[in-house]
View 1 (cartoon, rainbow, N blue to C red):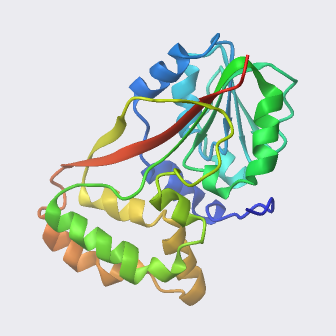
View 2 (view 1 turned 90 degrees about the horizontal axis):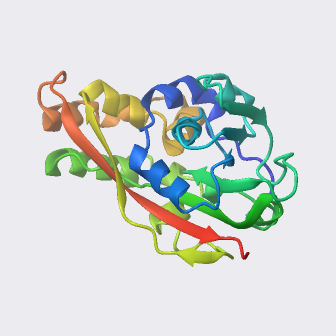
Length: 251
């Protein structure tokens, strides 16, 4: 992968902040429990700070970096979180200071060689790197079928090539660390139809479709999705499975 910053999300930063799912608290508690200490966590590719805020409940300091200033502008402030505009390969952290490095739904965009070198530099001996991703949500068979058609047939040609790593649950990405067998985690939310439509609008393929032709691809499935959902204000359970790669720097 190239080290050039591929900005698929700045244009939709406010929607990303509003509609992207939040990660479970149990994930951050687990990650803190396997770290040598809980002094400093670096959340790389933080976007709007979704993971950074979760880490702040368990670490004395969190440095959250992203190459997009527009994304960081949407991040909520927190007394233990410092936001910085920086590429994944240049954290500006000192050597050997981080107990944990996290990458939430962003590792597939990185220059992996450069990022991994930076992780090796900033992690303490025995420190932990955790990267996770999620693919399509699950709501109901009828809703899932419409989303699958939207994903593959409507915006399918507009997915960036890096999407293949998400589809493979990050198992095909290089990961040069002593791997840890992590437990399973899921994201669970109660959503209305408007939440789902807003979330589909944050997909990189949806935004690339709009940029290419000016039309909104969601219009092609809006009515079908509404029929599958039922009463638009009726909340439904939606779930994503998280796929984790967790590893430790050699002590």
